[in-house]
Length: 252
Image (tube, rainbow, N blue to C red; front, side, top):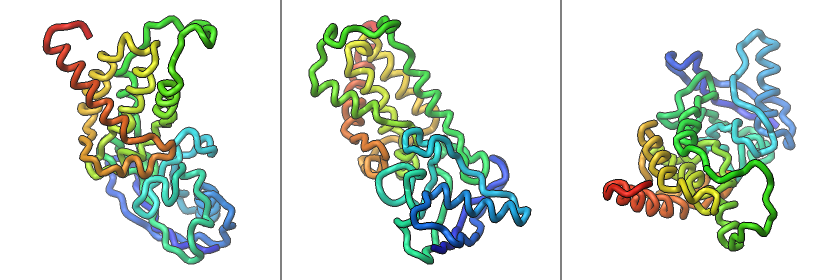
């Protein structure tokens, strides 16, 4: 297969970026998107041209580091991470535009690499749980309804790739934050700090410069972990309740 690539190239965070044209020739249909970029980079290196910089780690669809915006869609067509996208999804001869994730709190470091440390700071703002967790307890020692456990697992599936913020017209990270708030807040171990957690994480999210949610549901549409947007409404309710307790002088 052959493709025409329009790739975002940027030397460093302070330099202006631009789209540059490249040809991807003799690409196997079963090659992943990152393998296609590897093939292109091998050709560029042979011509003494600086290879395209992009993030890559597990290549198993579980870490999200491979995040790219492909033809305007975070992670590209389909539901999954960039590394799990295969070139058979495209037609021979297609023009493919490749850009980094676009969100103000994700500054471009170089080419297709962005700094997503804002997500790390949001998680850190949530703090720790005080429940003893040194050894594995008996599975039946803390009864948890199956519906609650399933909902917590749905939230915990978030891999923090940032596709939700990149897809949102407002640059909102509320799907990510609500998933992190919910997967601990739903379970007994995380309930003692749930008020402090939601207040800290939402305020850190605002401080990082992420936008608010306007219910476009673009986040849910591109999430590779299928995290439902219903968690956002849950987080809003918990944040409102925690804020009211704080204003009333009650412990949170």
